[in-house]
Image 1 (cartoon, rainbow, N blue to C red):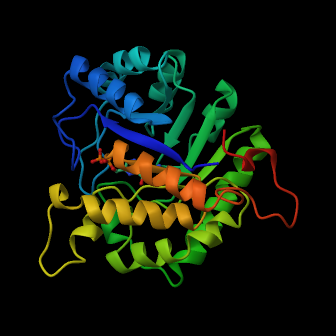
Image 2 (image 1 turned 120 degrees about the horizontal axis):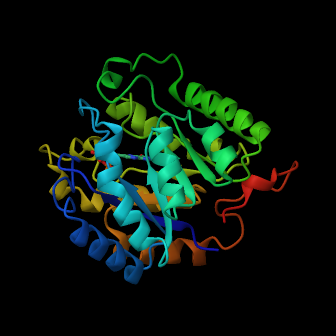
Length: 275
Ligand code: HH2
């Protein structure tokens, strides 16, 4: 089975790559429909930027941004809601979202109550403070343990679909992002589906001879998406859907058996299989 592709749709003025492009609801819905045509499996709708230093948005404003977009896209495609606010998650589920993409990894009780899937992403602090909190003794081990604990709590609460995500770029240095990418397989070994988001992120801009802005990070984004999928990530979160869908199909054809699945030894929890 090919890994899944989650398309990023930010209904915000300030997201680091697509900020301001889809603040108008009509344009956001058009872009969502375009992603569906390009083969996206999930469209991830967000109303609050989480780039380093981003200012928080109030509940009412976040709801105003995302709800009409979620409602318009949900009949066409699986919609996830990228939020850390319980009220926004609940209203988006009411409007048709079936997955809560939670960068705070704190909304498992909401996902359990609403009977929807949940993504637990690793982060320290908040987007305002996170880049001052990159002091890990063992970034790979600490991220894995944090996600394993949160996932376990969620499974105990009765969340049936639990994803884990290392949170590339969230409270991580460039080198720490690379260590996490090198060790995706150790997250996959938890037996839960893994989501990875590297798309257009700043560590990619620092790998070449001169710093590259987000507009020049497509190749690095695709390369790291392919790398992640080949290491067993069950889904990648990307801005560039069409190219990544082609890459995912190729990876799926090349690695037909184990991609994104729990290792064959040992029991796999029911949530380990990607939907
Ligand atoms: N990255 C961003 C936002 N949400 N969710 C998950 N699960 N994983 C990620 O890596 C992730 C995420 C940041 O990217 P983007 O949405 O493009 O930017 P912004 O936060 O500025 O809106």
